[in-house]
Length: 354
Ligand SMILES: Cc1ncc(COP(=O)(O)O)c(C=O)c1O
Image 1 (tube, rainbow, N blue to C red):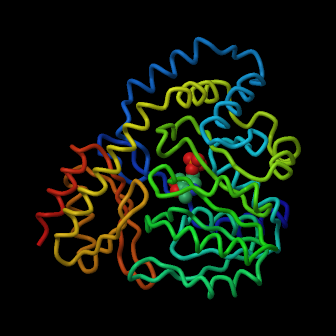
Image 2: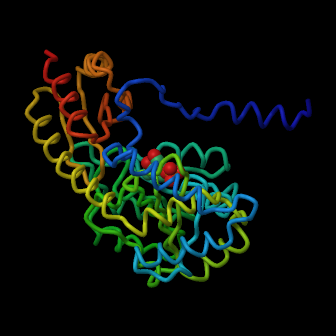
C-alpha cells in the first residue's frame, strides 16, 4: 500500500472510535432521542410521505418545501437556512471550511464527537474546563484562549452537562470575538430557555446548528440544518453542501412533521415535566450529584457508585451513557429522559443501591 496512505491510516486509527450503542430490548436512554413521541404516529407520517414522493426524481421541490416550512417554524428568512444529513454532516462541512492547521476553542466536557472530528480534520482543539460545581464557564479565560483561535464551538444547552449558559454570556463572547467563526450547537434547544437563531442577522460570524434528531423525534431520518447570515448560508447551499445531502423520504417526513408540530410539542412538554420529576427524585439519593438540565437528559456525578449504578441499570434493562471518569468531575453518567414508565424504572433501579 502507498506509504502516505499507511501513515494517514495509522494516524486516523488513533482517533476515538464512535461507539455504537447495543440494539436490543433495553430501554435505550443513552443517545438523547425523543422516545416519548408516539412511534406509530411517526410511522404513519412516514408511510403517507412515501406515497407522496417520486423516488425517480431528485428532491428539488421537497427542499423548497422544507426550507419554506422551517422558515415559518423558526420565524427566520429561508435564505439563512442550510439543510444537511443530520447536523453531524454540517459539522464536517464547517470543519472542512475551517481547514487543516487552524485552531478551535471549545469547552470541556462537551459533545465529544466534535473534538474527534477536529482531530480527523487536523484542526488543533483547545478546551476550557467548566466548573464541576455548577458547570459554569469562566468567560474571560475562554475569551483569552479563543483569541488565539480561528473558531469556537459552544453547545447550548451543553452535552453532556445539560446546562445552557446565560444568554448575556454568549452574546458577550459574540461581541468580543468578531474574528472567530462562532459555532453554537443548539441540538437540544427545544428543551431550553432560549435560542440564538435570530442573532445570525446581527452577527455575521455566528453559525447555529439545529437538528430533527432530538426534540422532533426523527433521529433515524437524518435531517439537520444550519442557521447563518444570508451570505454564508448562500455559499453553503450552492457551493459547499452536496446538492442533495438529504433524501426525498426524509425531506417529506420532515415537511409533514413540521407542518403539524402539535404532537411533538406535547412530547416536549411531557419530557420537561419528567425531567423535573426525575431530577427531584434523583437529588434525594445520597452520594450522587445530579445537575439541573435545560436539555432532555440528566448529567449525574456518581462518585464512588459508578459501577454499581451502571450495573443496576443494566440489570433493569436500561442503557445509559456511561461517560467514565471526566477530569474534575469523576465518574459520570448521562441519562436521557424517557417515558414516565422508563423514568420510574431508572428511579427504582438507582434507589436500591446502597
Ligand atoms: C450536541 C450534539 N450535536 C449534534 C448531534 C448530532 O445530531 P444529528 O443527529 O443531527 O447528526 C448530537 C447528537 O447526539 C449532539 O448531541
